[in-house]
View 1 (cartoon, helix red, strand yellow):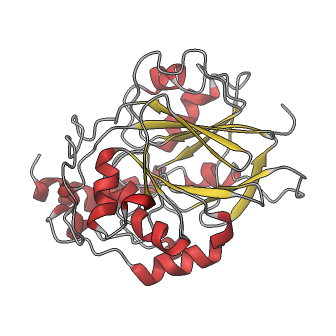
View 2: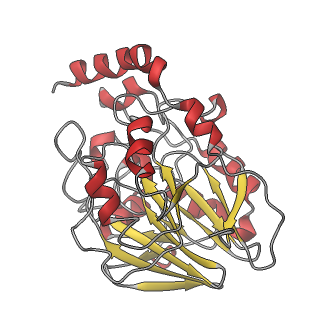
Length: 317
């Protein structure tokens, strides 16, 4: 599919999909405010797969992306200049003291373009594959500000233990976008296609209050979570293939109590414009229908955009 055809499809689909967007369903599932629990874990969803996780003492970011470039800029290969003032504002809002690491699950632009600048603002290391670290090097981070991790490795941040599990990226219109690795420092601004995939991680986050699995891309390696357990799965659903198989290999495999869809929103518009679904690749109602067949196994909940809510410990399950 050419860039022009893809762009035309994405521009037209919001008009035809509005009648069945599933936003009413989404809104009824949003996790509300809960009393603060001693030792509990709170998350703030920044859109896409971007999550801030904290227990009130320590915390970290995964895949933060707030610059939000327009569709035309991305698909026509124009340079993507990270919005450093916006990144600074979000760092202050989340609290520098509660950002001890910036973790990147894979190196596509919507997961990594802002990451080195969050690292600089927070004074925290950038954590990821060699491709991710080359993005950091291109942004001017020093080697002692970079933390290379490999599948199977774990790091500790406060009371959190974070384990990196090898995963795969889901296809978009039949193929994985921007494959390959970033083999040398990537100077910014760079084009979307310069942010090559690199390796892909599922990120398992263990804490005394419970366990969270961040599975940001809707691909998987069959059996990758054999023997893994998680109370909550943050499940990327954009571009998924067979929903039934996906549910079997991720939330059902880890025996999750709660499934929270992420990478579901339209990341071509600013966060301040509110939540709407990413055109062409969500079909939220179909996801809910498939997940509903497993209501005895897990509950589907959704996150408010850009607002903190407590998700651990899991209540009532």
